[in-house]
Image 1: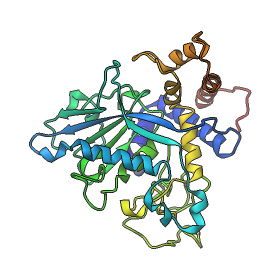
Image 2: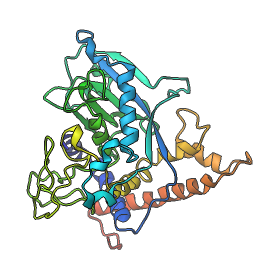
Image 3: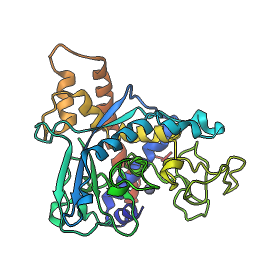
Image 4: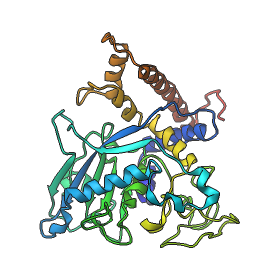
Length: 358
Ligand SMILES: [Zn+2]
């Protein structure tokens, strides 16, 4: 939220983008628009391990990195062994988001890769100033953030477990940052954050989810803009007992076992269907390059994914698949979005557009 507020203050573009993204999410939530995505979407990930040679444990091993992917692919598919601990009243809300994550097998130049980049740093630790995201400031430069989810794993200072950038921000800082000892389930992962769920939470932000309590410091005045999660006062810590009632949200109380609360890794078990729909709004909007790229098998590195997929959709390779219609609809969707953005920028500038907002 610190990064989010900083960008809102600094950047007119980010404010306009956030208005557009929120508008689209609302359309999904109210059913005016619904997801057209079918099947599982696999997001290629690059893990930048930024480590100081004075502290060799920061250079986490491949096994610890792989253990993180096991957790991601369980949690985002509602296949986590502890999903059974969701209270009965909320079991119908448990969502399989149909999103999976995989270490990248091709680098931005199309060469084979393990998807793991190891970079030495002379920094003692990093905070939320994004220094870890640039080689010039002792970190590692991102891979193109419209084609890869960038994950930086490093030492963080100030008790920080991780942080993320919401969609709509600058591409050169897009991605998630995770403390090495809150990453994966083996190696340096340390209780109570050794369940791999810091990354689940941060990727939730990367896919546009807000904290479940609405970041209003206990005021009950703001929520997470998802209808099926109860309004709750503030974050929860540790492993609370059910129910924990705040903001008149009884009898069931806070959904503290949601990945977007602050409880221990052993106490969080679900994303809801409403959260999944909000993530779909993001994946079919701001982050649609991941869907389009999936269909464009021969997308050359460095070429805009949308352009390549467009060529593929109309191309004469004789293999027009059922997916092509989906791609065309997504591209039409981006045109509509451009019109929406222009309209919102006009609104933001206070000009009369003759168009009423809904
Ligand atoms: Zn958070």
